[in-house]
Image 1 (tube, one colour):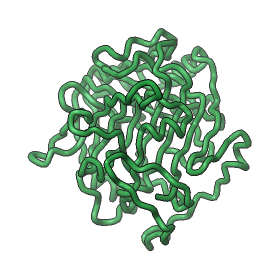
Image 2 (spheres, rainbow, N blue to C red):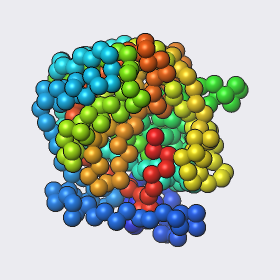
Image 3 (cartoon, rainbow, N blue to C red):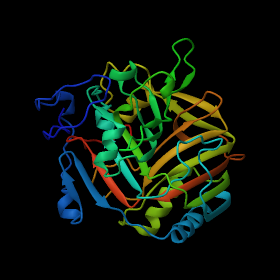
Image 4 (tube, one colour):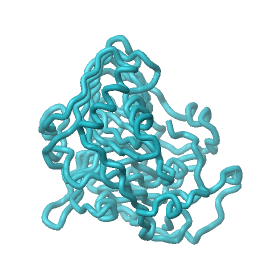
Amino acid sequence: MTAGGRGSEVYFGVCGCRSRSSGRELPELWSFLEPSSIKYSSLLPQCRKMADTESCPLYYPALEEIAGVLERGLKKNYAEVHVEVVDCPDLTQYPFGFPVKGLCGKTRIADVGGVPYLVPIAHPDKVYNINTVAKKIELPGAYMLGAGASSYKCVGMNAEMIFSIKAESPTSPAVNGNYLASINPADNSCLLEKYREKYSDHDFGLLSNLYASEGNPGKVIEVKVKRRTSNDNFVSCMRKSLKEHYGDKSVGMGGSFIIQEGRAKLHIMPREYSACSLNTDEDVDSWLHYYDMKAPLICQSVFVSHDPGFDLRVEHTHCFSHHGEGGHYHNDTTPDSVEYLGYFHPAEHLYRIDRPAVTHMVGRD
């Protein structure tokens, strides 16, 4: 398989999926889209490009400084706000249940694939493997959390992937704590499953946004807010606060938050890719299934304050729960009673893997 038509190899998963693109012409329905004209080398002299992977350092302020920026911004959007630097709670414990204790150590953000591989027409040949991603971001054995999509070739359906996985290292096997949220064909309800209970691979498809680290204990930013007073969701409020303060300096963050009280709007993609091209946000909106889900929801989130020319999805959050609900987070639906508690850490480096050669902004909500 080529990386966005650029001729570089990417790894296909262990489910037996292998093919090679011949660089065939894009379908006519792509003709209204223009390839990105941004040259990363002209904008980002510190960036590197290796085969299908581009990388650059992110702006990395002190935790205390970021906490202050977030607190000031969130106070414009929530009635009660408390942000401070704390020791990371043990994330192996309830309600998280992660395979690592913390979010610290050699922190990275990886944006893999992209929405153009899902819409307007899906590219099911885009299959990626967590162990290979860990090597591409120069952190074998990394713990990764975030949001993405399943590999149709490996699981036989399209679904929301909620990432919480430790990649293999030279001394230990991978530990897969991922969840899948799909539409139950029996009644169109949410079907939330632990990935490892049905599948033995560590693959995903189409796209993902991942925060990676060594999974060590350490200092993190704790964010507590109650009662939303604006229209933006929790993640957008934090991202926009960073953007307003740091401008064109790209600050990347990842972490996990809990919607402790209230309800939230989430979507789940259909099990089958759309047979018709999805050319607008309205097309995508009509294709998705939306749900009003109850707290507590544990949400895996990745966001970047400013795209440094890598065609990023600047925020992406997927949620799971212990009561069978999960999916892609949009916003809470109970602003007067909602309560959030989150733990976040900035990333030192950004990696862009298999960036689509032809891009658009449809379906990135």
